[in-house]
Each structure stands twice: as structure tokens, then as C-alpha cells.
Image (tube, rainbow, N blue to C red; front, side, top):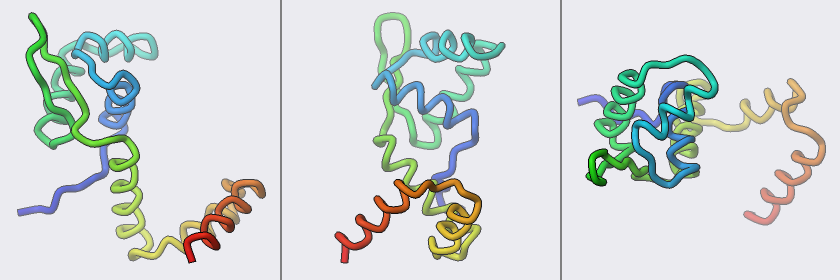
Length: 124
């Protein structure tokens, strides 16, 4: 049996962000939100939400004539798992090369870097 992967596809993550923002949503809610950004089929959204339910990220309950989907995990927990999986896969479990890359690529500003240093010092 394959281990559960925490990483979501870009489309799955986009849907999850919308559900997290609302706390709960129907397929129609998500479809309409996505439709504001790009053309997408209702059936595609429905299929993606069913996949997210199968993967354990969403749970549904009957609300009148539609299903209401809720996240099974808070956003920070899912993101943490995705980051952990990425670091394991790409950097053999060490976050240091990732931080070095972000600093060298100027993806972390001086203010953020100082905040990280304070957080590290506080955790020691």
C-alpha cells in the first residue's frame, strides 16, 4: 500500500483554499468562485471535490438538496504536511538547503530573515 501523500495538485489546492476560506461550501459555491477566475466545467469541480473527499481532505453532509463539503484538517496542518513532504523529497529531509536557496534567490527579505532568526533563538 502506498503511503498517503500530503501534496495536493495545484487544482486541488485551489479548491481547498476556497473551502478553507468559507469553512464549508457546496460544489456550486466553489464552481462559481472558480468561474470568476477562469472557465471551468461544473462537472470538473464536482469530480475534483469527490477526489478530495476520497483522499480524506473533505467530508460531505447533506444540506437540503446539495452536499455541503467541509475540510477535515485545518489549512496550516495540510500546508505543513506538503512542506514536509517537499523537503523530504527534494532535500533529503533537511530544511537548510531550502532556506539557503530562498535567501540566495532573494525570496526571503531582510525583515523576514530577522523574524526567522528570532523564532530559531526562541525555540532553543
